Each structure stands twice: as C-alpha cells, then as structure tokens.
Image 1: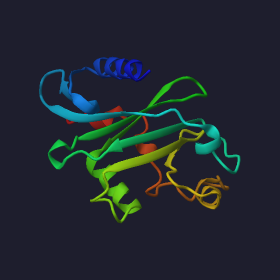
Image 2: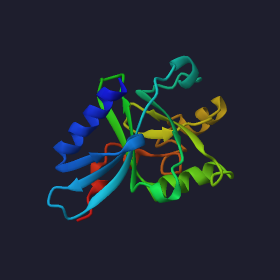
Image 3: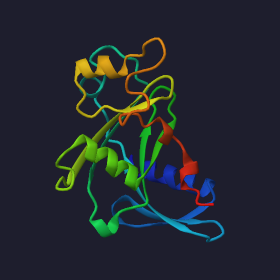
Length: 177
C-alpha cells in the first residue's frame, strides 16, 4: 500500500512539472522543470487510523484522518517541506499537507517543551467536511468540543496553531518564482 501511495505522489509531482530523485527514508529532491531550483521534501504517508480510537469522541463529522509517525531528521537532513499524504475515505481522494519545514518546527515546538530532544513525532490531523484541517494530536473530548465544534461563525481553532487549512493541497507553496 505504501508503494502505491508513493507512486501516486510521484505521478503528482510529474504532473506539477517537476522531476524528482528518490532518496532514502521518504526524502525526495524535486527539480523545477527549467532547472531554476530544486527542493528537498520529505513524504510522510499516513498510517491506517482506527475510527474508534482516532475519531471524534463527541460525534463530530470528520471526512478523513491522517495519522503520522516519523523520526526527526538530523539537522543536516532538514527538508525544505514536509508533505503529509493521506486518503479521504469520504470521496477516496488523496489529500496532501504541504508544510514548510520552519513552520512545522515552530508549531511542533509550541506543542512540546521537549521538542529539541524529541526523536519520534506523532501527529494526527482531522479533515472536516468544510475542508478545514486541524492538528488533533492528544486532543481531549473537552478540547474537541471547545476548539472544533463549529459555532455561529467559526471554530475556536480557526487561524490558530491547530489550523493547517492553508497547507491543504496547496502545491503553490513549492513555487519559488
């Protein structure tokens, strides 16, 4: 299954006009079509979530769950972007989070005071029916209700460090024109 996800990812990269070189551990070097620049990216493919464990405890409607586990790379291996890949079970579409390395590090360090020494990271994202996506790692039922229940206008988590909506399928982030 992971191989087929990698193949889908590689086809997407070619479709976007990049060529690529596959490295070890999910690392890729992407070359812009006119060879104006290259990018180091790290592809992380979701594990299969268990809805009773990883799903909503309050009955929130969740379109997809991305469950990721990865080791922190050595400082000289930092990619330019992390690309998290998971399947939307609702419509069978493949979803991507394209997150700049510095932004991901900033958000992970806000979550953990032990960030610099932490070797293994676990992140869980929930994709909502309105295409908003949130980091729900270690969220409690009370936190789920408070931050993710949609009120009259928006959720409490909107535009905060839990909100990853701007990175959802945003391939334009890779452009350095």
